[in-house]
Image (cartoon, rainbow, N blue to C red; front, side, top):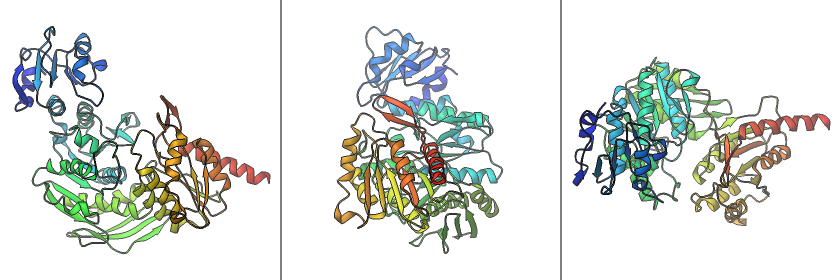
Length: 503
């Protein structure tokens, strides 16, 4: 591919005096945004970040082989490659990436899933439904990037939605591996930073909107505006699947696409029949304009009813057969780190690992677990460092109201003092926001906290380990250390069994 093939992608973005372009015969090998990762033949797009302007690294990119630079800044006098000045470098990066990889989303049914909670499970459900229909489906999201059918086709997820060139490269890999669909989590960061601009979505899903990411967004309105952008990008006939139990859902009906609503508690296009909950899963029917879908799922709890409704609504709107939808939902046994039961039937306590890391997600988790616990509810959680501090006391208050035993610990403290984070969580646990007989412990070391919670649990108790879910690491200071809640919990359960036997 040469520059002439990509020139049109920047039409409308060029500033007056935009600079020169490479000769039409100059071959291009890629689109880069990190000067350290430039390879010969790349176009380097200089992004303006929070702490630095990528233009400062243009010379490093050129030394690495960049054949052109795209920037919001004017060309320095001593730069020896073509320099193109644009109004918005992030938008330029997205549009160049779509053009370079030949818009792979258009060659599949690419479903964008956005919202605060439920994106990952909804994406996995959608993928399972497509696979049941005989349509190979890729996944881009928080847990992993799956671009093909084999274990070798699964990539570690570095972000929920990566930067534009990475998104387009992964989508192109999916097409090359024969995928006919992609279930893609689309984060508010990605939407605000224009990582998915220029893409062709076949449908978009809104799960819900609750407090999160206020370290990045100015306020909840700003957060919601970012989410809305996904629906504004939809083609007119593409369905927009909206949870109207969330008050924000109805306000998206005029954003774009063809609105299809789902809900549990309000009138909607798609609604469930009577719900049956247990630790073994869910049983319910779904009423749709096309008829009734009869569902059985291994997923647990009311939040997963919403996730299933979101996936089923999408599948119905895309005219997938009911028997395929039923098989797809039934065949998904679970999602890593989402109400993942890690104890065995032979254990006398139930231990669950979950990714819940906001006050609303923690509330949903605890309300799901409460009726399933034969004994007490024991909750282990912390809050991430260098992230939204306002949710810390809110999470403390939720845990205090709904738990019998709380062990507050570290999540990913990053550069913050773990004890300070714990103190901010404790501010939410007051006499008015805690169960009368609740027991409270603070143990900054996460391994020790998990072991303590499982050791002090009584037969019949349910232990919830919240916050990190599928993550296999813990960020402490500048170090990223191996850490897996599931593995640590299973080790603690084995020790508990040994301890019981020795008594």
